[in-house]
Length: 502
Image (cartoon, rainbow, N blue to C red):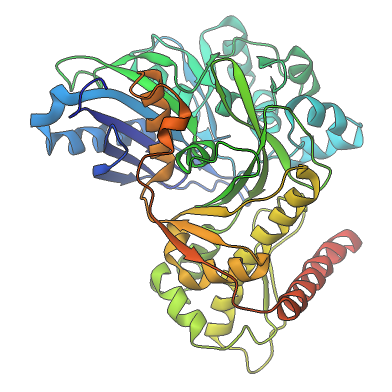
């Protein structure tokens, strides 16, 4: 142990907000501060964030949090970072200031480029090297679009006066006063420029997307040192940055899913389902992708991942756009006010359907409306749509994994919705453990940082740390569930076929 009273400062930079959190070195949450940022929608299907706002919110959240605990500053061991993956920005090399808005993972502006590459037969090559799909979820097509639309940015990247980075890279660069230009394997592997078997940037992949092989950040292990920071002069001493992980992999790490067959579902704005498949790269044929779960001591751990664009965002759409609810927490009560959805099916394809369908051209739809349909039926159908898509992804993983699926772990905001957790357990006819430990993505980054600082010698030591779960077991019979899934798939394929015919 380094210091029994030691604390980790963590930054969780998500799609909707930036959190600063204090954890004990054993992973107990001490306090947190949150700053939300604006969602920018320049055109239908486009999503941006103001990267300067994100950095200022990072400083605002961390300084506000630490100001409440100034007597503990000497106990700070390190800063750890977890972040929304795939979102990227171009920034000035000298100052770190962004040169454009960050382009968010939800943004679909690269769709035409993706379609062209698929038509040109590039899908197998990209899949083989990255484990991923040619899809606008990932940065490559959108960076290609941006550099064609902004030749000034292309020129600056070529001459080295501007840098490309995902959000972790950008924050590290700013927090270290432009001294460290680096990322970790979990974030690098989400760009479509990274070979997940060679663990290296790929010239071949850059060529596929028509992007010059400009300077890309150094890739380090998640538990590695990423420089030192004083939070732009706020602290009177500098603290090291240890523990950098993309949010979904960080949650898998925090859930201690270290063995093949262990899986987790992170419920956020979108959702990520990860299944640990061990140290050998395998590729899925059923719509899920292969991800680098992490790299520790030179050894990669791989996972199958199902990416879902809209889960929590579906419920906020009910609140913000449709005004059907006042607060997301009331959806459970509303859903339980009716015995079922009365044949209503909600297809949450607001930015297309991701895993396991991968159809960016599909639009959202509500099917099965009748004169007797009520608000409660629509709210219930929206919640159920999350369960259906999660189940579709898990089934696809089970088909391709070659490892026995063990108990699924759940984390994120939606685990507080017992209706949804029970529905997912029923659909999968399997136990679901909903974590009651808060802020698992940040905790996973902290665990990684603790390994880097050698507070824990091995991952197995983390298994003995406290874990709190609510256990859900199936209550509905298989015949009922089979009928629900059959009707769901009929609804989905009706929308898929209509789009093709249109």
